[in-house]
Structures are given as structure tokens and as C-alpha cells.
Length: 90
Image (tube, rainbow, N blue to C red):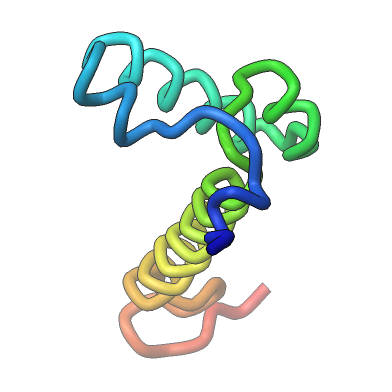
């Protein structure tokens, strides 16, 4: 029986974490920093050999977290041009 993981070649980070936790952490941090800087996932895969499925999950999570942070900050940012509830005259 073929599993979905078999179709996605690459490094199994769970196993690496059991064998060498510091190396797993280093690779995770490095790959996520590349993704945050906008690197192509295939390039990150080629560089780290982390499974593309894992990289796609991280990209989705990074984007979702960025949207959540953006929405949260817009709720706490006052409207431009408003001072103590009255419009500012220019």
C-alpha cells in the first residue's frame, strides 16, 4: 500500500527530530526564514530537502498568521485624522 507521504519525497522532520533534535530545529528555522523572505518552495526544498507538503503547510500558516496579525493591528490602530472623536481640520 502506498501512502501519500511516499509520493512526497524528502526529509521526514519527525524522524530527524527523534534522531537529532538540534539539526531538526536548525533546518526548520532556516527553511521557515527562507519562506518568510519569499523564497520559492521548490528552491527551499532543493536547499533543505524538507518535504514539499511540509513546506506548503508552513507557507499557509505563515500567511494566515500574517493576516491575523494585520487584522489585529488594524483593530487597535486609531483612524487617521481623528483626534478625540472629532475630525481634524486641515
